[in-house]
Image 1: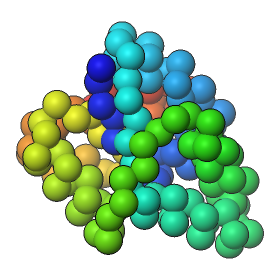
Image 2: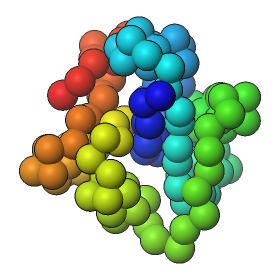
Image 3: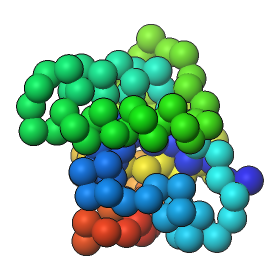
Image 4: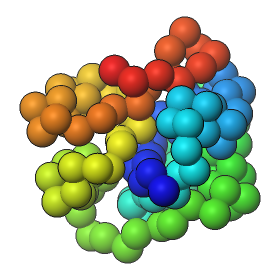
Length: 126
């Protein structure tokens, strides 16, 4: 089973563009996957959802997706990006789902596979 770590901006963008994440991740990976995220991602999504800004509806949808997805929430005190980098450095088999350019570059240096949103309608590897 492939392990996929989810980042906040990836979840918000996927919800905004109504991308069916479970189906798309399955299509791209061609194998069953297990979703992981830091508890800080939930905190960030909750802050965005309560801010009443343009991404609030997408953040609500992302939280709804996570509630139904069976994603494993990992407790941590670290901010999201450092936690993702540390997790990827420990386990190079992890696939990270993010649209954060700076984070993508750091992950590429670690030779970690990065899943991004392509063309507002599907997922693909960077």
